[in-house]
Amino acid sequence: MNNKILLIICLVFPFMAMAQNTIFPTMFNAPAQHNTGNVRISVLSRSNHQMTTNFLFERGSRNSWHYHPNATQVLMILNGEGYYQEEGKEKQLLKKGDVVVTAPNVRHWNGATPYSDVECLTVSDIVPGEDHVVQLNKVTDEEFAMPIKMDNMIVRLAEIEVYPEYLEQYLSFANEVDRLSVEREKGVICLFPMQSSENPTQIRILEIYASEEAYQQHLKTPHFQKYKQGTEKMVKSLKLPTMKPLDPDSMKLIFNKQR
Image (cartoon, rainbow, N blue to C red; front, side):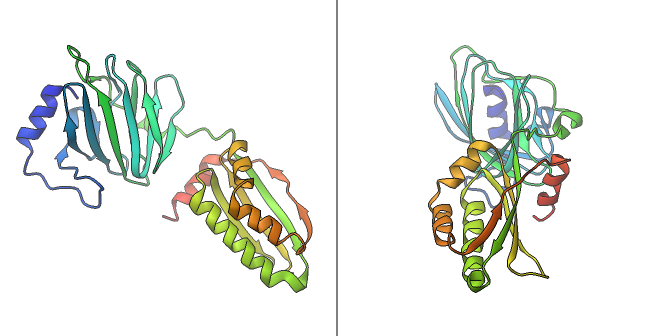
């Protein structure tokens, strides 16, 4: 939005309720003319050369296609999950801690996913003599629903047999490394260990990594190295067949349903 619109928001909507559970206050409803769904906004700081703005996009909401004339913008995800897309490129899924730098004059949009609110912070250059933003068409439902490409994803079903005398110790190691990997590594989408009800020494672990790079980084982590070295004598056999997901988009919906 340009400077005039920001001024109107600050003057006209001072009594609107503040959104809850956000890091920074998001005090005003963003104009429906340029947004879809419920979007809240607060200008945290502003000078002649730069503006810092906090946004809360509720589930399914997004701004319109737009660009910043001759100005760079940095987008930082503070909480939740959201989408970001530049014209001519695939839509990206962004999570807490992700940072995107949008180059000047690049047409783009961002917003929440259908399953999660997203709070984000933007730091935008202000170029003298230029509008802060040029608004374009709204993001259509079809554009918003376009699936995210996951062609680089790695899926494995680890097949492990453990010596019976080490089974209890092995399960302790496996549960720890799986939990820490999912908690701490962005590129580890899933590590889900399972135990055969007929033969408890037969362990299967569903492994899903965002990419080969994410998998290689996982192998270097302290928690994986602790698991590898600690269980070396416990494992009787190990197979790591790589699987091909038949429908990656349906698989994502399975995880989203658990929220």
